[in-house]
Image (cartoon, rainbow, N blue to C red):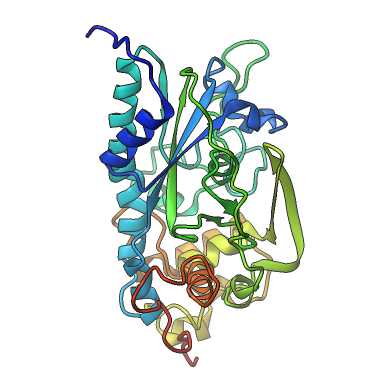
Length: 361
């Protein structure tokens, strides 16, 4: 195919992405990643790239409604994780990438993924941190296969002075670099259009596109601490925070115990998991549920015990984690829908119409 000779513009890229199904599109200058740790610097993926294109795909609020009502949990991991990450977003990346290539430029597409980097996508630590849900599958059904980790297990740089593949960058901060929104106290990425309800994907290109400004509108996060209050595992600090700067913009969020969050997100805990009988919690055989019962610190070994004890009660056929929580997301949406919040007028009916449910056990 002959290269198109007309100039490729930011407007053309955005129009292509939106028409293909993206809900939001932002364009950032690669220089905004200056200062990022080398093992997470996306500039190493395609050093000639001048521009990053960020696309946001909305999470239907209805998949949270089922968790809010305590009636339907499976649609969140299958539609809002699996559907977006595996089907909807890659199709848009493919479409926009072809358009960029047809104008003679490179399009390095990067879909939402995990466990691909030299450091753990859980807590940023080097080494072989496990992916419990996949490890269970390995242990039970494929003992001859290598364990699935939260990082690439034996990766090494392919050339002197390079970064070990597969480089994985911070998706939420990259979305900030594209001008799409800001970080909330919950460590979730927030946009003025959808609050915390989106996932993102990216294209790196050598096309000299005009970047969007960093988001500078009214603060999206209200610092209401609803995310802290409604976390079933109390995984998020009210007082301690992490601060970084992206393209000169300050990004701050509450310090999160990622491993503990992982455990409660996937299994909810005694009062937030209707799939596990009360007697299982009461028995707590071999202390396997100590993490969820607040009797020990969160780490890989304890999370493996939780998975081993509870995995059978809620099959995860979609291949994504067994979502039971969504507490911080639902708390955030319910606050942003109140007067003065960025989602105040998005829906005719609020997500939350009464008190959040909790099981009396």
